[in-house]
Length: 341
Ligand code: CA
Image (tube, rainbow, N blue to C red; front, top):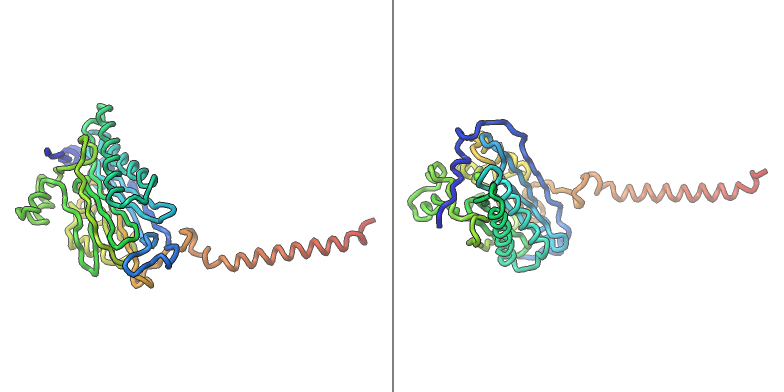
């Protein structure tokens, strides 16, 4: 299979540095619904604390990355996505957005399908819609996108799917582990032991990927079951992060703090290191039981933190006002006949 190069888009000399408005999407998940859903080996997917952030970087003039955070309203199952588009003037941006949108739709249609089949179906659907559009619109010809997806369904085995060089990492007990192998030219060299991870980061062909969504009629998807435990932290990211920061740097930032702070810090550090590409991250923290992480969780309705605590007082106040109103009406009713002329 031929490689798809994003070299041209990454060449700083071809794209003048124009400061653009940053695109930031921070999304903090809501608190768990019921402790009763917790089992010894599983977890309630709604307890996951999640933050997403995407930034244009310091060199590019357009952000071709996209991310998505979907939660099924009934089952609470979560689908997290990062996509990194490529091709043409608008193509990359269109492809990554189409991928996230279509995969979200497939997920919302039926999240009860077995996770690996659901992800496979979602990736194939995204591949199809992008490929068809690029075939029909000449200015979008050749567009495509990477994608990495994490499905959290509460079982002890979460499911990862990926195509291209967007990555997933897991941090457990302070140890960072890369869960995905890049479908890229240098990724292959790393797999064969011909390049170290550090050498790969600085390799001139580091942008050339071997698989993408939307560039062909069919796509080969890599599905990976991964075990998951309370206390685990996950990171999904585009190569704008993994290309700018070393594993020890990522590890240090991911090891502590709230997902939102981590997401912001990762983007900040990637930009400090040069910000040569768009940077997109999704950070997932599965709190330990009894919040051993020291993380202050969001309130149950995801709204004003004071609202939950104020609830009982508010109900009492409303009851008292209603009672006073009824009493006043009764008194007026009694006095009325005497006062009337
Ligand atoms: Ca990229």
